[in-house]
Each structure stands twice: as structure tokens, then as C-alpha cells.
Length: 244
Ligand SMILES: [Zn+2]
Image (cartoon, rainbow, N blue to C red):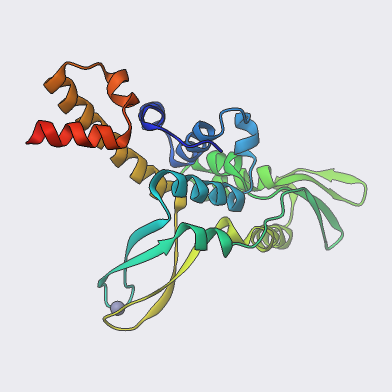
């Protein structure tokens, strides 16, 4: 994974700003790892995708990760602080390979939930179609005895078992954090959407960069490329002088 510079941040923001969040996450990973084929990134189990997003976030903006949530009991706004390193260290390993699930005479070949599946499910607002799209991605093959089956033909109890198996084998597909309310002392778990969080931070950084380019170009007549090539420290120093 390479570090993204100012020009990279603007480029990925510009190309992916209208994408679906699933594809924005992939665009971020692709920018940090341009040699890696898109299909391979999209096939990363979600737990691994998020682990890479956390590493990228740490590279870009540092270890300290501030967040906000609302207490579900008293509705007070709760601010919290996370460490990217601690988040990465606390994550159990994710199964990355196909595995076999045998249940009630059915034999299924399963693949962990990945961005392909999320993207397919996101294309519809119908919950049944979305569920089918996810299953179609995760169930690589299904048979009962010698008979090969389509995902549509699986009985409900087998589908439930598949869903449970997917959760058990990629526990970090959902990144849960423990929160406590300082006002009413209620404790709860919240899902941290790393993809959305990192994209929001990157978009804000891109907006700041555009303002910096605008300010320096107007003051000195420099080209965008030259301004982006400046180190953060030099850019900040010139911006201070312009503002003085
Ligand atoms: Zn509370």
C-alpha cells in the first residue's frame, strides 16, 4: 500500500465523488494499491477490505480517529475517540477462501461477503432481490445429492444457515465499537462504517486542497500542478504569508 499525496487525493475524489459508497471504498483502495486488479480488490472479504481501509486512513490522516454518535437512550450527542492501530490489532483474522457448508443433505460452496456482492445488492431497493443478489455472490455452487441447484431453489432453512455461516466466518464484516453515554451511562455497540467515514474525510481534504490551490494561484499565479507538488509544510507557510 503506497501513501497518497495531495494530487492523488484530488484525483480519487474527482473520479469517484459520484460513485456508490461501495465503489468509493474500492476507488480508495485502488489508489493506494494501483498494481492490484480491480476484481481482486472487489473480491476481498469485507473484514479484510475494512482492515485495508483502516490502514489507509492511518496513512492519510494519522492514528487518532475522532467520531460522533447519538445515545439511543437519551439522544445525547456522544463524542468518542478511536485509534486506527487499536482497531486493526483487535480484529480477528477473516476466512479468505472458499469453504464447504453441509446442512440437511445440501452441500454448498461459499465465498465470504465481498464488494461484488454489496454492489449487486445495492443496485436494487427491493429487499428480496437484494438478498438474492448477495446470496448469488456468496453461494458459488449448491447441490443436493447429485443434483445441482440454483440459489432460488434452496429452502429457507438452508438460506438462514448460509447467512449465519457468512457472519461467523467474517465477524469483522461489521466493525462494531463499544460506546457509553456520559450523561445517562447507557452502553451500546455501534457499527463503524469505515468506508463512509474515510470517504467523508477524503472529500473534506480535497475541498481544503482546492481552496488552497485557489488561494495560492490567485496570489502568486502558480499552476495547480506546482502547488500540489509543494510539501504540506511549504504550502501552509505560503498560505500564512498570503493571509498575513
Ligand atoms: Zn444517554
